[in-house]
Length: 198
Image 1 (cartoon, rainbow, N blue to C red):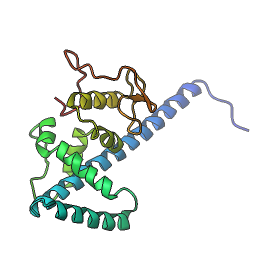
Image 2: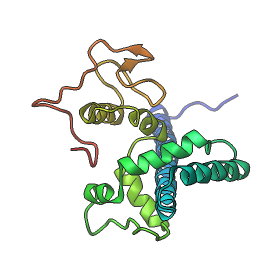
Image 3: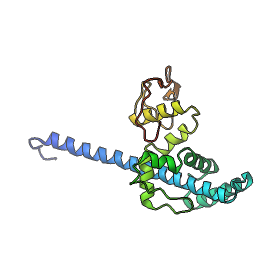
Image 4: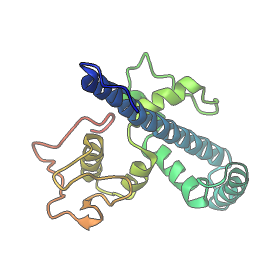
């Protein structure tokens, strides 16, 4: 039999529950952010390697196929040919100059071409790319820059006019259904607030 609850116990328990729930959410965000920053760095290294190989299409594809096989063999899922292409695409969409622009000049420690990325650089990239990998995968499919920013801001807010947009649902949809009015309101009132979005 459990002991009787002392006075003030419900509030005490609620505080601890809130603390644990917040810590779990923060942990999930941190893991997602580190993965996104790591994938950005993988994309950077792929682009630099391809440029070192004069960016020949055949060389690039061969490099990605070899890299996919080796990384998949070592780490399992997550390094398919498609994912490596997306990592490269993320880096090209958010090059170091854009990351530096997002962060204050004195704190940005983004590596120069050919330089290995130290852990502090990944932390800087994490600050500049606040969404999860799955969100960026979906955003990379959006061609319109204003729409891109709109959906990124909606994802950061966690909910939009049409409900919560996650990386698993399509931008402009609510739980997979088309959103009736998902067009970004960009003239004279576009949402802002995602780092690096202009």
